[in-house]
Length: 81
Image 1 (tube, helix red, strand yellow):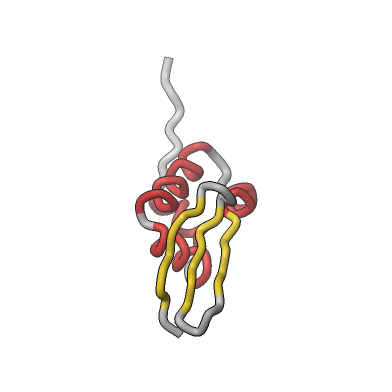
Image 2: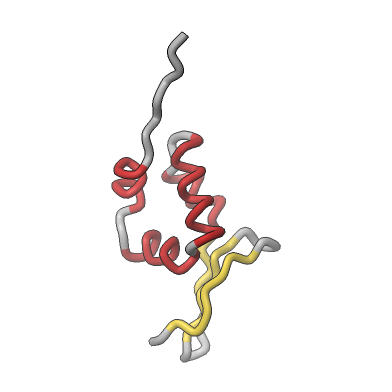
C-alpha cells in the first residue's frame, strides 16, 4: 500500500492517511495526547508534529515508540526562584 495523502483535519482533530487501495486511517490526536503526554512540553511536541509534519507524526504513532520519543526530545525544567 502506498500513501496518497496525509494531513491534519482540524474539523475532526485527526491526522488522516489515505492509501492507494482506498483505505483510510484516522488517528485521533486528542486521544493520543491524553494517553501518552504527561506534561505540556510533551503535548507541545506532539502538536508541532501534528501541524508541521503529519506524516512523521502518523509514522511515530503507528510504527514507533511515542513515549520513548517524547522522553528523548522534551525536557521538563522547573523554574528557579
